[in-house]
Amino acid sequence: MARALHKTQSTILRRITAFGLLVSFMNASCLVAPPIEPEPPDINKPPFIDPDRLQPEVSIVTVTTADEITVEATELYDPNLEDSLSWVFLSEKSGVLRTSRSQLALDQDELYLGIFYRFEGASYQFNPCNQDVRDELNETIFLYVSDQPFQDITDTEVVVEDGAFLDAWGWVFQIQPGVCQ
Image (cartoon, rainbow, N blue to C red; front, side):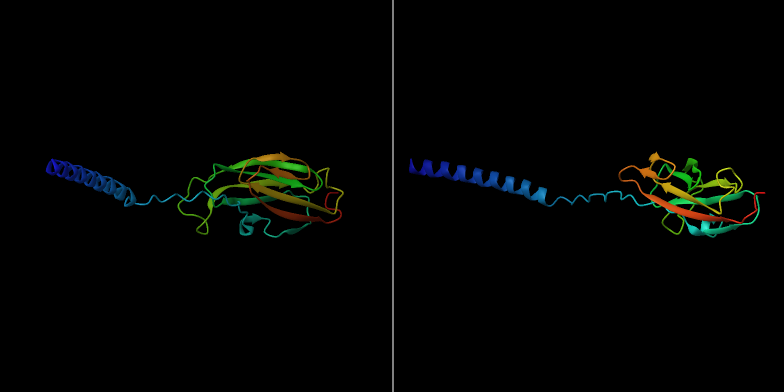
C-alpha cells in the first residue's frame, strides 16, 4: 500500500509539474510578444502667412492715386493637412471687408519650405476713395487666417474656437491729401 501511495503521489506530482510548466510557458509567451508602438498624436500647429507672398510687399504703403490697390496673400500655408483655412480682411475704418475660406491647392508636389501645405490665397481690392476712408490720412487693413472656422467676427476683432490657431498681417495705407478729389 505504501508503494501504491508513493506511485499515486509521484503521478500527481508529475501532473502538477507538467501543468505548471504549461502555465509558465503560456505566461512567458505573453511576455515575449512584440511591443505595440503607439502612434504619436496629431499636433495642431498654426497657419502661416508668408511675408514673401504678400501684395503690396511692404507693410506701409503710400497712396498717391485714386486707383484701387490689390491687397493679397497669393498663397496661405499650414503645416497640418487641413480641409481649408478661414480668412478675413478687417479695416480700422470699415470693419469687415471680406471673409472666405481657402481650399487646399490641388498641385501639392512637395511641401512649401519642406513643412507647409499650400492653400489658395486671399485678396481684397482696396479703394482709397471709398466713403469710409476718403477723408482720412491713413487706413490699416488686417488679414487674419485661422486653421478652423471663426467663432465670431466683429468690426474690430475675430474670435477663434478653442484649440484653433490664428496668424495675422497688417498693411498701413498712408493716403496723400488730395488723392480723392
